[in-house]
Amino acid sequence: MSVTIAKAYVILASLCIVVLMNGCRKGLDTLDSLNLQARPLDLIVYDYTKPGVPRHKLLIQPGTEMFSLIRRTLMSNLGDWKTSYQTYAPGYEVRSWDFTLNVTHDLLVLNYRTKKGCWRQVIRSHPKGFRDTFVALVEKETHVKE
Image (cartoon, rainbow, N blue to C red; front, side, top):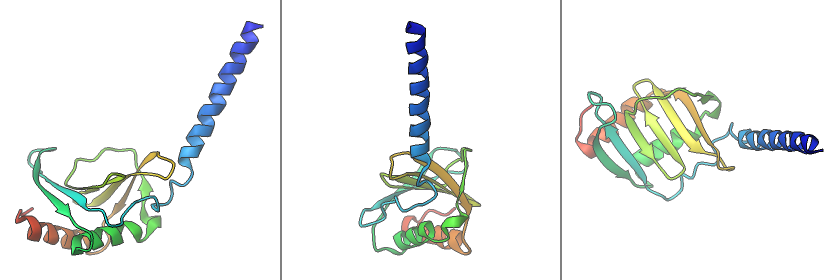
């Protein structure tokens, strides 16, 4: 009898894991869980010669050109974002409580919390003109050249 109960627990536990994993997968194909309202964002500029070492930190206020550029880029062309399981060295990192955007030389790497509380990483290439505008705005605000 105890073997039957043990098997039932294993099956039940397996089903719970499957349900939980599928629950986290649903809704992951949308970025609508990002909270890009009236909350400032942190920007960290990393030193490319010393990986992981921040050179400068900046607060990005809502209503600024930088905030608008980031919001517009995250919310446009949602189909261009692809799931990625690789890790990426930070270049410029924009942080909020529910997402981190890493701006590398050729990619945008977004880690974000879904509405169900799961974390997901997606990547895409820079939209046309984004990186040049972004870097120019960073240099203007921080006086730090790339």
